Image (cartoon, rainbow, N blue to C red; front, side, top):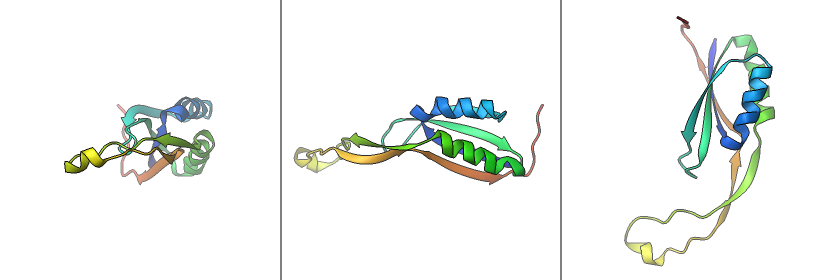
Length: 109
């Protein structure tokens, strides 16, 4: 058995949740915040039998897409604050970050 932790952008969360339910995959959904853009994410925790891992990965791959977003960097802290001129930069956001962990034991009460 594997524990799959998928971190997805909030925009992709409803689509992924719908596709997981449609495929009969149970998941726990948690609100989370990214460290770089300080934007909302959703973390899905999914328990999957070894033979279902590739199917779940495919659902995640098809449900989450990356996109370009223009952001203005946060101002640095320190003495050079007066010389800081923020320029918008284009970054790639979205998609999914997936961690797959071996599970030693599973119990449900």
